Structures are given as structure tokens and as C-alpha cells.
Length: 177
Picture 1 (cartoon, rainbow, N blue to C red):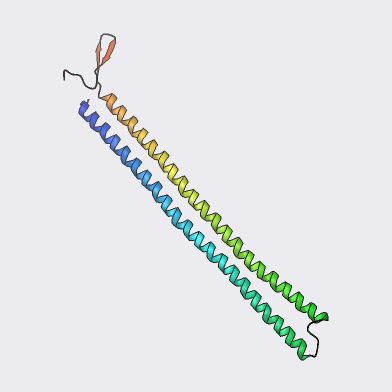
Picture 2: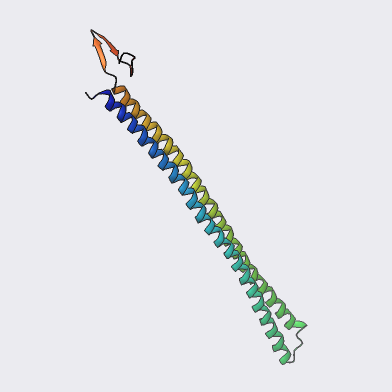
């Protein structure tokens, strides 16, 4: 049987390994949080761009609608029709209504896209927090596992002495040694 020095050395190595593994797990959790924050930031920026693009598309739709209405008025005037009354006015009003609906749809699409991207960013950050929490649990498990291995090594350092049917164990350290 190997001496108690080997058992003490193995116990020490087991504790050191557990500590190193726990440290690595904690660092991995911190890295997961940093990575999720970076990714979430990108998602939020994309949401902001999507929102701005939706409002820009709405603005462009309104401008195009104004040009169409101007062409309608010019066409009615060229034909000698009164553009401010009757069916020509109703046509212009219907065109204006459709243009505004199209512009609002563009803006709503931008708003919806921005909302979805913000939700994705929140979920990404939450995933990073969960990874950090799991890393902490893993670190605790590593320390507990290393401690239990160390205790096994230390218990093997005690050599039982038998006298008759009674077994006595020698302590880890006694003053006479």
C-alpha cells in the first residue's frame, strides 16, 4: 500500500483540479453573458433600423400618392372636368385613402419587425443569464466532486490496525509521529 504522503498528494491534486474546473466553468458563464449581450445589442440595432425603414417606406408611399393625385387633377383639368367636385373628387379621396392605408401598413411592418427583434434580444440576454447560472451550478458540482474525491484519498491514508476482532484506525496526524 502506498504511503499516506501519496494519498495527501492525490487529495491536494483533486482539490486543485476541482478548483480549476470550477474557475473555468465560471469564466465560461461570464463569456456566455458577454456574447449574449453583444448579440442582443445587434438585434436591438437591427430593430431600430427596421423601424426607421418602415417609417421611411411610409413617407415614400405618401409622396408617391401625392404625385398620383397631382396626375389625376392634371388629367381631369386637361379633359375639362371639374377636379374639386363629383366623381373626380371621390376618385381623389379614394386614392388618398388607399395611399394612407399603404403608408400605415409600411409603418406597422417596421414597428412589428422592431418589436420582434427586441423580444429576440431579450431572449438572447436571458439565455446568457441562464448559461451563467448553469455555470455556477457546474462550478459548485466540480468543487463538491473534487472534495469528495479528496476525502476518499484522505480516508485511504488511514491504515487500520487490527487487534483481535476490534479495528482501530490511526488518525491523520498524531503528535508522536
